[in-house]
Image (tube, rainbow, N blue to C red):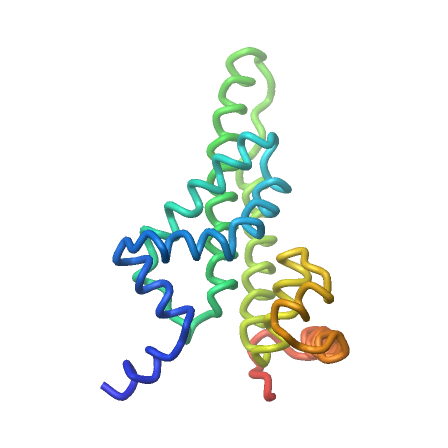
Length: 193
C-alpha cells in the first residue's frame, strides 16, 4: 500500500491512469503535451505530410490503449511516448516498404533485396536509440527534461526555461552537465544527482 501512495504523487502516472479510464480531459492533456513531439518524429520518418498526420493519430490511439501499462519506474513519460512512437513508425515503415517491394517485384523481374540486410541495420539503429533513451531516463530530472525537450522536442533553451520557470543559466548548465554525463557513462551506469 505504501508504494501506491508514493506513486499517486507522480503527475505523469496520475495522467496516464486518467487516460486509461478514458477521461477526455486527460487524453486531451496527453495530446497537448506530446503532439508536436510525435509529429516531428513522424514528419521526419514518413514520406508525406498526410502519412505523418495519420501516424500521429495512430500513435495516440496506441498510447491510449496502453496507458495502463505505463510504469514511471521504468521510464519517464516523455521517454515512454518516444519509444512507443518510434516503434509504431518503424512498424508502419516496414509495412509500407513490404507493400512497395511486392509491387516492384511484380512489375519488374529483378533480384529481390535480402530483407535481413535491411532489417539488420534498422534493428541496430533501434537498439542504439533504445540504449540512448535508457541512458537519458537515468539522468537527474532537470537534466533529463532539458535534454528531451531540447533534442527530442525541438524546443529552445529559452522556451524550456520559461515553461519550467527556471533561469536560462540553470537550463544551459543542466544541458551541459547532461551531455557530459551521456558521453562519459556506460549504458548501464546509474547517474547520481
